[in-house]
Every structure is written in structure tokens, then in C-alpha cells.
Image (cartoon, rainbow, N blue to C red; front, side):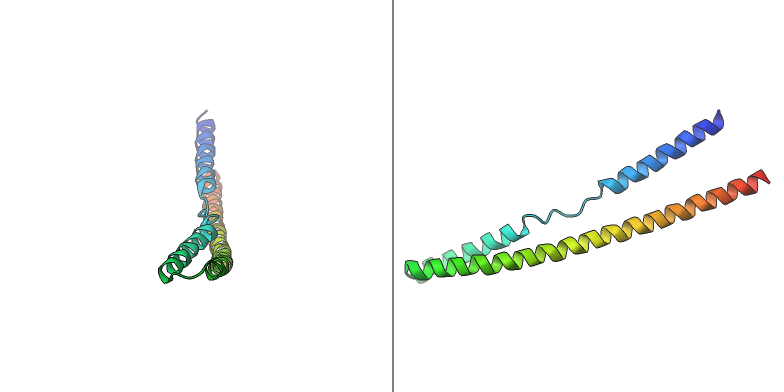
Length: 115
């Protein structure tokens, strides 16, 4: 009966560990390109208004800034996504390695106790 309780406690502890690892989420980088593009468009609009340029120049500046900074934002998002996913994978691998070592040491201590 005591062994069953220990097994239940061990299984609940491992479930808690898996819950903790599944709760780790990478940063939400979906909005980064949009924010960068909107900031660049706002700056382009303000500069065009202050300089009192014509409609054609205004539209060209706005279009150019939206396209260029949209691409820059996408590149930044991709770099950040790769960095966060790689860090998450490394952390998970280290945790699994530590768990594996802990479980193997527990098995060794159980074998020693049986002898």
C-alpha cells in the first residue's frame, strides 16, 4: 500500500513537471512586422506633412516605407522565432537529461536497497 502511494506521488510529480514544460511558450512575435510597419508609416506621414510635399511624393514615400519596413519586420520576426524555439529546445533537452540522470540514480539506489 505504501508502495502504491509512492508511485502515485512519483507520477503526480512527473505530471507536474510535464505541465511546467508545456506551459513555456515562445514570445508572440506575430505583431512585430505590423508594429514596425505602422511606426515607419507614421513617421513618413509626419515628415511629409511637415515638409508640405505633394500628394504624389507623399504616396511614394508612404508606399516605399511600408514595403521596406514590412520586409525588415518580417526578417526580425523570423530571427526572433528561431532564437526562441532554439532556446526552448535546448532547455527541454537539458531538463530531459537531468530527469534521465535523476531516474537512473533512483533506479541504482533501488537496486542497492534490494541487495
